Image (cartoon, rainbow, N blue to C red; front, side):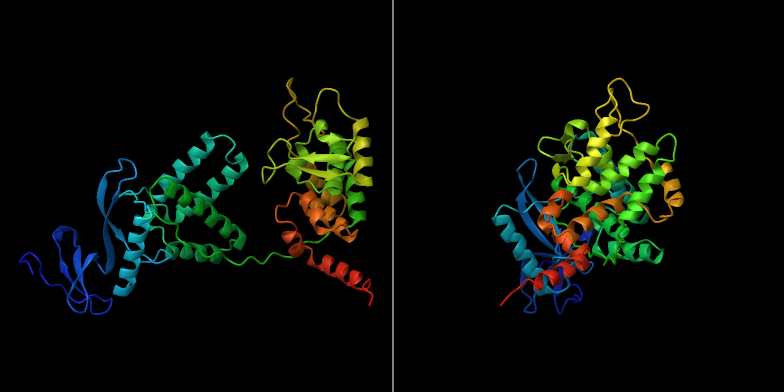
Length: 400
């Protein structure tokens, strides 16, 4: 042993001897096994194992030597010598397969990089919708308020899970907390693409107890639409808006953006999301049912000559923009006046799905009308009570 190498105490990871190396100022120590044999390439500092590897720099492609902290699949530092050797060998295998990347020596804080991430999304076109970016920005603001001073490498599962527990304790819904974690995951994935991180930490999601949604009755839909006509300025539009959502299953934002060129009376189809701004960015076609066709033909009689929107803004400009912004104020008063206090526009979408399933339309067709990409999996979960009733009726048709 060289004079400059002083024997250190036994590491807590199981009788592993280590000795201070050439970088004494940094506190790194060579690691020895139980036979006092040097484990080449393995170092220890403050109870944490590091692998020293030579690899190509991602920008210059020149060989560089880098010490990398050894972690398990969850991003937690390994604590024993066998784990450290296995993790180091895995990194060596990734290097041989040319899939091992190195991260920057000093990563920005979560607050710093979140700003970079959001600004980049705003500058790029057609990557994410503006309201999606706004939601992520709000979620990241909450996260940064909790641990935004940590550098990206320091954002561990322990830190995130503690934040989640604190949010739930303060009354936040599980779904809200899960959306925050999703936004964080998006930021860290971006950091990996920017070569700031090597791997994505694994975070546990909270279990969401989604209550069963009440289904509006046809009488309530009719009462809401009829009551809307009593409002002088926006009443007729709100009447048409509610019925169109109820008969087509459109989301409120999608329905507001529908233009008359999206209504195909020849093929008897209503095209939703043709502007590419639907929730999943894809358009879909809803085949006419009797109520939908009759309602659209009635609306066509009242079509304004200077707008292509089904729901044009009363203050539209010469270039026919924008569509009506919202009917929130009228709907808030409407739900009280029509005596349906829990009414929301999204309930019209659930009404359409319920009526379609109870009319024995197959689940795959209903899923395509709603724009679901899972071929009916979400419908089967949400409307299991209706589907079970249908199954019981179908069972009576079986003959032996």
